Length: 246
Image (cartoon, rainbow, N blue to C red; front, side, top):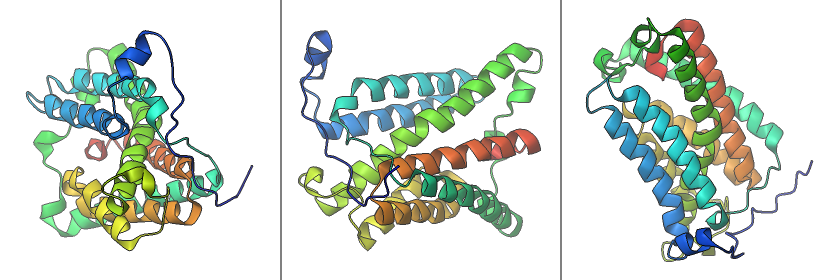
């Protein structure tokens, strides 16, 4: 285990051969970061078109297609280093207490932060007559939230967008985790925008993980923090049946 502050390596220029090389030839590093997020957000929109009819299939597609995009474009991404992974675990545990505790406090005191009951998907009710489908959906939901989303989001928010704020013309000119109050605020704010009624809670969580990034210069630590928070949040949801947190 290393605790070095050495930054993550920039996107590799290593070439690959065959059909995959031809497919990726015209893909820029920026699009490699943006497209998985676009797929993710697009399928969130699809899942809400005829809610809850399309939600389960849209979520399953979201997990599979985003994972496939990450694999396809992997050579374009910053080489992830996993130093300070243990600090990522600690921040992830703190993060779930912050996320749940702060959101419950806000919902109790301000109606604005309360989730719309019509937009809460209850898989136990939807799959009431199909226990195997319910179990499969929960497995996909947890896998997506803990294995796919943390990698995709941390690459997008705290690698590409963070560095783009610092170097708009070429994000690769900025270092991974380069300390910047403006990047911390902008990235946390943009992260909050996609979280609906959880926006204030998301800002605080985003700043927590942004602080971890600046301290460690480690994308791996941020991915682990994100994954730990999401895994523990899944446990909270399944235990309390408070599906609004999913």
